[in-house]
Every structure is written in structure tokens, then in C-alpha cells.
Amino acid sequence: MNKLWSVVLLMSLAACSPDATESLPAASDTVAASGNPLDITVYKSPTCGCCNGWVTYLEEEGFAVTAINHDDVDSIKKQLGLPDPELKSCHTAVIDGYLVEGHVPANDILRLLSERPAGVRGLSAPGMPMMSPGMASRTPKDYAVLSFKDNGDTAVFSQY
Image (tube, rainbow, N blue to C red; front, top):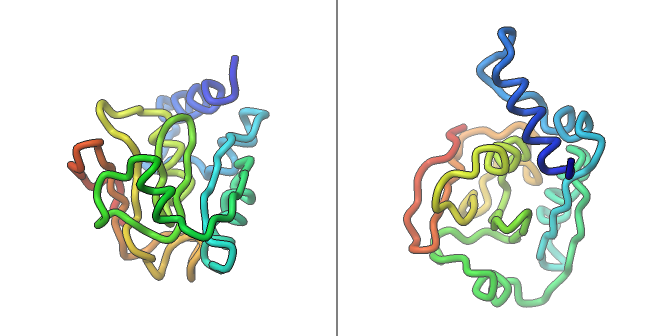
């Protein structure tokens, strides 16, 4: 069984358990339980401290991060197909064919990989939310994570 499906299976079992709570298990617990880290590639500025903070956060949550420094991250966003400039943040990641824009919490990434909502191209935490992983808080507070489609349609994926 590949590592992504191991994580999806573990999340599904946790969600179906009679003792399951409303929230997902910690991302680090879910990824660790799979026995394999999930590979994610992050395109970021070499000088951005919050980008480095988000990379560190993902590594601490059990992801295998390949960080690629680039002087023109906006060109990468365009090349990867980020549909709307309003979704932009300081870094862009790719995991299993999905785009992850900005300071998206690890549990939202795992939920995206588990649920695979129809037509969704990725997730975004637009701008640079102050109370987000990689910024001032490991625990997300006071912002929304949006899902987006190739045509630019968005929906609230998580509200903190």
C-alpha cells in the first residue's frame, strides 16, 4: 500500500471510530502512524522567514519537505496554475497533484488528500494570516482556508 493511501486509511478509520471526536487527529500522529512521510514540494523565496517557518512546521508534522528556493515565486504560481491572484500568499506547495498556497495547516492538507473533493485544484490561506502555522502560531486562529477550482471558484474549506 503506498504511503498516501496508508494515511487516507488511517484517517478514515479514525473518523469512523465510535470514540472519534469532531476534530481530526494531530497531523504528526496520522502521518507517523502511516509509517511513511508524505512528500511535499514547497516553492519559496530564499529570504522569507515565514516560508522557512512553514517548512519547519510541516517537517515537524511528519511531512518530507523538498524546499526549492526561487527568486520569482510569482512565476512559479502562474506556471503551476494558481487561478486567481487573490489566492496568493508567500509560498506555494505541491502534494499529490494539488496546490497548497500559503500557511495552510497540516490537517487541512491531510483532509484534502483524504476527501479529494470533486473539481478542487488546491487550498489557499490567502495573504499571510498572522495566527497561522509558520507565522505567530502553530494553532491556526482567525482566518479561513479556501478550496479553489481551476476556474477560480472558491469555497471555505476550514474556518479558524
